[in-house]
Image (cartoon, rainbow, N blue to C red; front, side):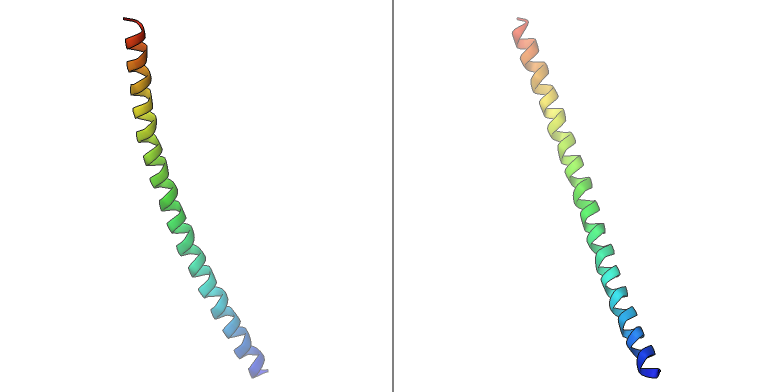
Length: 60
């Protein structure tokens, strides 16, 4: 019975480590996605400026 409990403790420790690694990975992924959104916002703003400049140039 003691061996079974020790085995379950080891298994629980392994699962906890995997959960901690997963949480860290999800945190990194979240940060990457947020950075991508920020970068895309800059691109969108530059694109909007370029479109406006082309429209202004076309109306001359």
